[in-house]
Length: 96
Length: 478
Image (cartoon, rainbow over all chains, first blue to last red; front, side, top):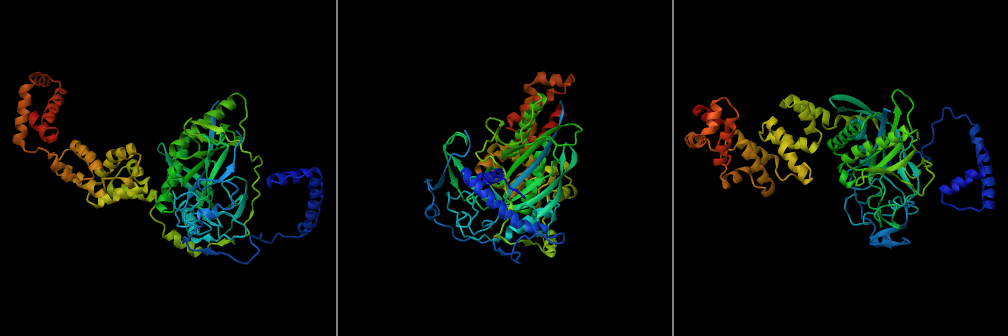
């Protein structure tokens, strides 16, 4: 597996991260090394192994359909960079 | 050119649970903004979601009623995208192992039965609600977010691209809605957003196997907009293809006011959801015995109820179909019949006066001011000959506004039908005497002339004369 600067730039875009050219170079090299290391796993024969859905041997952890008190609105909004009339306020969403 | 229309529907339905899918916040609709929120549904760091057992039960119910296989091993995944209605920047949904797969539903369109296959049903959380500052989303400088709806449990029901027209899409959606209502797993109120629909639409030349490029239409929030939105989009794509152009694969939004679909150009360019197994939720293993138990306890569904109305009450397939398309209407019908209402008469009134009044006020039968008992009392007055059918409609009108019982209105307004023959004879004779020309016309063979005479008699009695008696007595004397 060989990853390129383009792959890293795309992942950065999807993750809302901005990198300089030199950072991109560095990360591409590092990520490639990580993936190469993990590539060892691709050599294993897993034909008869079920994909792991969860690392713990647990299933069906559920709760009853009961309501519990929510946060006060004041507290819920307390970390919001901007708020208005009890709403979270966010910047423009669509291109005009 | 004549194209084949190919449509697949994605139906989202909010489940009728008390609490949200992964936390104990209330799902109550219409609460003040950001009052049903907690660290879990706001996606604050370090919180752990736990699935509401009712959501799994409802999903299995819906899966069985839509003829699906219930997967014995199911899990949740994270669907990553950035949009302010999603506080965690991912939606907890199901990707490769949904709760139910491979279902189908038979619908009737223009008297023909057609099978629509259902690819899958999965459980997921709803997103928050955005309030835009400007007139439209594109002209707004900012948006306000209410996270009350975030985490309300949803089922997404995905059909195969088996739908071939706007009418079929509507019929399929109506039937899915009816089934969910019968199961009592969702309110299915399209006006409150508890039932929503997206349509994937593409065209291809008849006979071509490969699918054309599709557009996904969002914001189809009523049966009317489903039909209109699809019809519009089909014409838009036809025009593009006829001019030798290419349909762009994109998401479009239906504008109900303008009657058009418009491209949604999001700032989020890359549509790569990067699904990954949700590490905070453990898999769901549904016990086959539990599935069998749920299956055995499924309520009567629309098709079975329609058949019962045909078998037990002699209703036509059409009438039975209309009445059973809504559980609430079918319940109203059953209650009326239990009150000794004649099934066919009740059916006619339900599809006639009752639905006319409901439609004109834009309310559903659940808010009908005339109860099934009151309706059957009114119908009993017709049956006993105390009032005519025509007067009954006026009484019904009065019942609707005053909420009084039929008998009270009939007494108060003196609407009791005149069935005393001597009283009617006197009026018949005076009308004959006053209208020699019509009498002569009738005798000369103009059968229509009798209608005028009947009308005069009804006018004098304010519609209260027993119509059968009027007819008999009039004809005797002519």
